[in-house]
Length: 108
Image (cartoon, rainbow, N blue to C red; front, top):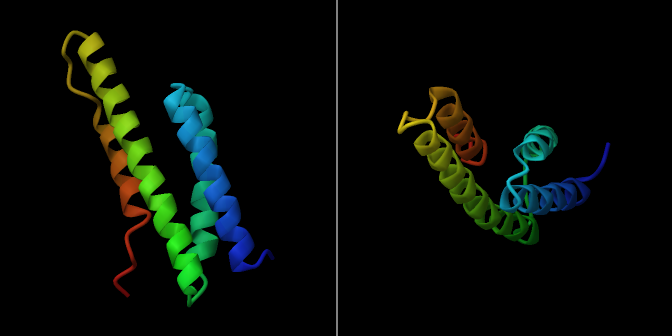
């Protein structure tokens, strides 16, 4: 099993790829990358303690995710507008919400 530093490095790299996919509107690739990132998140949160450097690395990822979420939201709104002003689907909104919740600290 990879160590925590390796997991965070892989997570950071996957986030950079996800950001590039979002910026180029390659949402199919973004979905595949997000599945990989979800697995990495589960591995990272399974570790009890993070060093300051690891916490900072994850904070940098969160900042990149803000760009990704903004881009996805803009894309979702553009699609909704293109569909004759129909509101965006609940499924898309739930996906963005799950993505945001994935990085909130566990209250337990």
